[in-house]
Length: 261
Image (cartoon, rainbow, N blue to C red; front, side, top):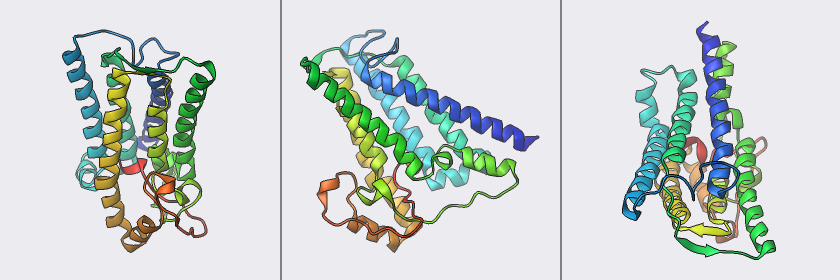
């Protein structure tokens, strides 16, 4: 019975993630949902700024903190290991829901692109960023990333083992294509308000710090010289920053950004 409940729990957490991910696209774009980055309950500038920074900081601490190996070792003393990843996904989704709900708009205009073709080109570029994020999860292991593989194996009384470090597709070009996709999605907008700029700046800073000083450190600790060689050969986020790229091995998947951020 517990195995079945774990499977249902993992599926419910995944369903919440999907709904949150789709809402995030509309929230950042400022279209298609009743509450987005540029509307909602207003507040004085400094109050709104403080609330928004607190919400972004809460997500950064929760998302990076729960993904660290030391936290996982402590956390799985209380939470069964098969549902650890699903619980992480649930917590991340709930923090994002809180951010969407309590976000305070800062409507001051930074830039606006009014030309129809250019405007739609920026929307298309943002959509490409989101598509890079989504497809990047399937290039690695989408269902492992969001906890479904673990609960499925557990329900079938099998052990879900980690896959070896290898590279393919986007991971031959940059080490963290998911994070590159997020950066494109957040910055490619035809209407940049002060609130959207704050969101883009803080999330960019979080991505750079978390990838460089947390994620990459954990990957070096896990894979050692294999990952150090990968770092020398493949750029972190910008495809043109290095000429050489990693040579892949047969059957490879590079565990880059999202699983541990």
